[in-house]
Image (cartoon, rainbow, N blue to C red; front, side):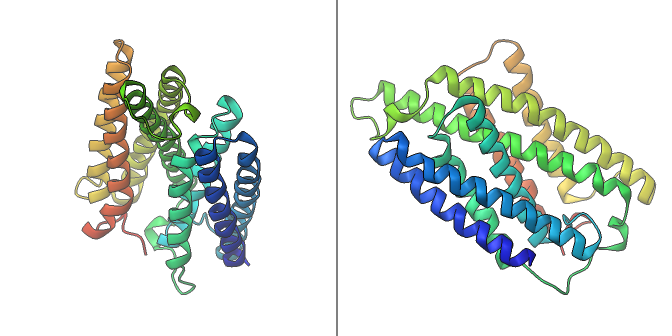
Length: 269
């Protein structure tokens, strides 16, 4: 049942993305309504899929590739819906919906009914550490999308031949504010995720997993965002902050996707 729900969510996400592109090209706000409805319903089906999966396996479904990609996609969709409710930025969908679709599509590809949770991960810490990290990733994804919009809008305002839908993008101030607020949410969450991960490691193996690839990449990514927070507090705004936000989210993607190729305790089954 959870696979069917996930595939239905994937279909709705694809329709939502198509409508968001049409909205951008034709600059008609009413075209975004079907996109918003599709993604909202898709998100609800996605959450139901995760709930059904949890009921089936009797643990928080975040330890397999299928589960991790699915959870990331669902939280990214939630982040977009919250950002839209706050800012009413329809153009955010053009930059955010593709990743949501890709994550959900990959989740469908990696589904393996025979996979099981490793014994080391059968811990109550999984209900604290992992959701914190994924929620942080989702918030930082919104910051990344806002940074992309900022750079495109800034370039368009300076260009004699701006992109077709530049006047559909929000102002530079709104883009910067969305990026900053998302960073202010995401950074504490990944910080708490790293701390709880260290506590989990101490309880499980008596020490920090310093040689685990995902731990190392997570720490490097955290340092990038710490630097961005520091510069933000000292008055950094605009293009420099946008570039650093993009670099940080590339670190998130490397941590999430690339670490699996280096082995370690965080390798997905």
